[in-house]
Length: 213
Image (cartoon, helix red, strand yellow):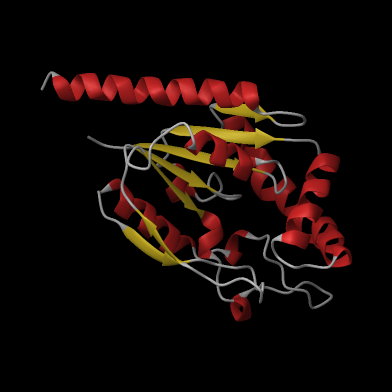
């Protein structure tokens, strides 16, 4: 039976990663697979630079969308995917080999999953995680300093010149295409309950259909 493909997007700092982690906790490993756009960045030397010579990782062309699409399609057809983790140029991080196993629920997540037309066409359910700009920038500072070893001045520059323009052009316009918009200014708990309930019902219905065959 074809898996349910769930696309989850939202601006940087909207909390979509935390939302997905908590969502995954409600399902077993053989029920859900999560594949992220963040593991498909082009090599650093292929990234565009802005007028100040700073690499801009917040553009659709920063992603190897062909490889991303190919691996999503593999999962849909029941094939496992092995991919090296992308560590955002953090020299302190040790990249791991990631293995994605096919599952009844496949989450495809990232900034541009609705912007990439061929990936968007594969999605059965589209979820947009939303938050106010001031909240997102605070979350972005915390994340990039701790996880990616970026100085705060660098984080603020990138947010103003890269992140926000990219959000306004390549992410926010697709909010109206989403089936579910999750408000995460304070908490996404209500949205999480709604999505979990829907996915659990889908799996239950699938199990009944398999049983009566």
